[in-house]
Image (cartoon, rainbow, N blue to C red; front, side):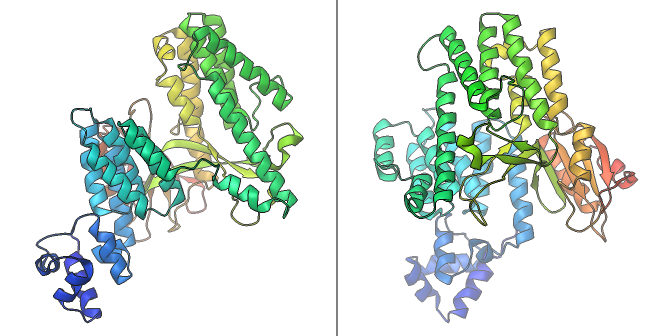
Length: 484
């Protein structure tokens, strides 16, 4: 990447009417370092970039000379490369370049911390891991990534004393979570908001306890795990006031995990009938969730949680830049609160249902006993059902995404969906955007670049819609251009 850091630094220094010596003193650097930066003979360390940018009151991107469009394009390239490479060393190589170019991209920092924790003990640089986490936590002001970095670091840290010291620094003996603090504030001030916060906490803690109940691996045997799953499902029937476990409601995640773990545990003992009954219920629930109409009400089935009932809003989770988007999560069902007492941004965390998460569990499969049965004809039926329902490249799902406006082209041109060959049991959907003057040219160029990085060997246009979201013929430009 052709950065203009040296020229930009020199311009910023001159705007302040500073000499190289004065800037060096202000930043705690040598005059030689400033000179080498300005001539392009060297670049500052990754941790020095925010210091320089902060001194001049500008962003790191601006001092580097990175435009927003260039940033998004380059960042998309790094995301693609990171997802494509195999092995922790190859991932770290991509991540280190990503972080060097975008030192405040907290996704890159988080993934680096996690990857460093996966390095074998004999090769792990624990000091570098700790320094990276410590530096990032000082600079990161985004709550989501700040919390993610804390959890990521603790998962990666291999020294118990260091980890406990870290917990003492960043934790508290009291519950200082955002939710608890909000409840403290609204108590006695706003009964409706307090009620909503109380119900949200009740829901979250109930889900956490159910998750603990159905887990296997922390004591007990598989028979205990089966009993716990059945106990959890019986409890969920009582909570929702419905004996139908395949009915979409706000307990669907807890029901799905309990059913899938129950099936997996029965198959441990090769109790096929019971295992497949539970698996059938799980797949049916997923299919029913996907078949929900926009606006369908998802309830907890009890007035104890009535402020948290939601309406379904189907769409797609997409990533990438301006010209070429891609989706690996596929269909998404967003939950919108119906009775929230909060105006504007809701402080109660919203969430999304991704069918592809369960597709991976069943069709990949990753769980041990599901994997033992993946070649069983009966099991294959369920794997095919979940693939058909949750696969983003299924024509019905593509049509929904494009014609219902879940994804639109900001330039108003046509939008073409392209599916690629199978990668690790997950098909990808790419969305090529037409621009007024260049057509699909830029999008095709970006797609082929991505295909080369990811090792994609087959691609096929699925459907094209015009600016009004009506299905039209796919132009030859795309059909010929996507050949890989």
